[in-house]
Image 1 (tube, one colour):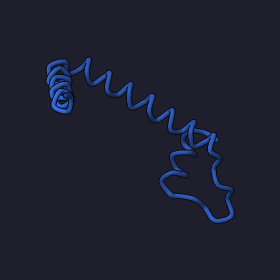
Image 2 (cartoon, helix red, strand yellow; image 1 turned 60 degrees about the vertical axis):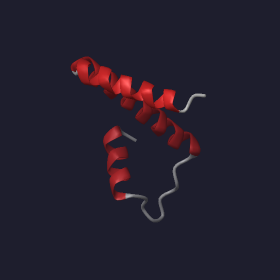
Image 3 (cartoon, helix red, strand yellow; image 1 turned 120 degrees about the horizontal axis):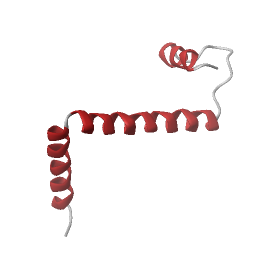
Image 4 (cartoon, one colour; image 1 turned 135 degrees about the vertical axis):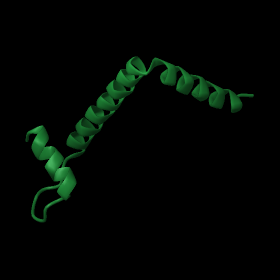
Length: 68
């Protein structure tokens, strides 16, 4: 199944009579999604370094709020 077919299937949802996807396929799709998400965040950090730095600082401050 190509990436295009997978995308179309996700948009239209499951088709009656078509077998459900396996756990392995779901995990593979999730891993791909997480890799692409990480890649997008890294790209954004390179393209907008000031915003990325500000976001990183805000995240650090939020984490410090919960430490004892």
